[in-house]
Image 1 (tube, rainbow over the protein chains, first blue to last red):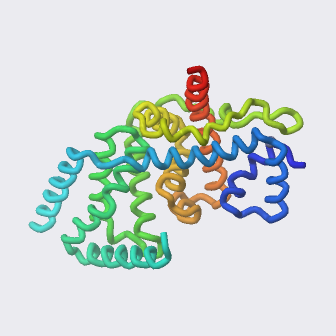
Image 2: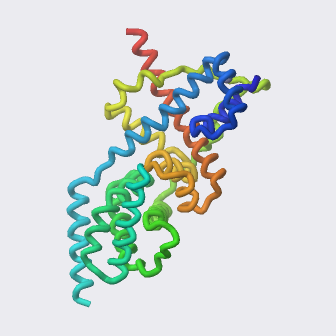
Image 3: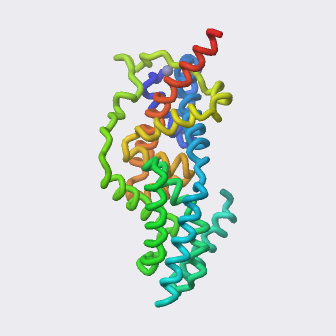
Length: 82
Length: 209
Ligand SMILES: [Zn+2]
């Protein structure tokens, strides 16, 4: 049986689905006998999801948007004069 | 993203680049409309400061317009935009006082001699829902990402947050695919550990009441 360390080293490729069938099988055998590694797998996956959902909520604040707009307008005017 | 969507995006990009290179000023607005949010979000996530992110966004937009003739169409336009954004953000960060680096290794999982997990692992993955939309949780997550060392942070932001492919990230950062994978894995392990402390504490509090 593979150990926890090997199991965690393989998690990335396991989630991507890029492991050889045999390796994938021995990993799943490990999970069956090791609840901590299942907990690890679940929280590893959750980490990506919750970080992505949180960081993707960033919107450009209105005052920044306005600044960018006038900045672009000014720059365009300069270019047009050339 | 579907294949046709990708293809359409690519065509829109190519047309915009041609317009810009031809000096068509209307293309400025379109480029800004398409990319300013991505530029702002990436630079904000790297620097965590609104003013700095605004400065970088302005600077990047200007660079896009001024340097458009140096853009080589053999790589994707968006990759070029990300690269310019990263460079501008790093320049900005370097001009500021540096915070002490956290060692990522201390937060990686630990094993006993036989390779088995040493710490108790709690599964908090089912219990994040009610916490996810609180300001406190946002702060914890933002802080955790902020603590990532730069090398790991940028891979995490591009791959897991932006959702770019491993290949694209490897092109933008000029890293091999295995290097991208290993940095991303380390970033996830680091963040998992950081977030575990927070969610486990919440779960144990909930258990008491
Ligand atoms: Zn295990």
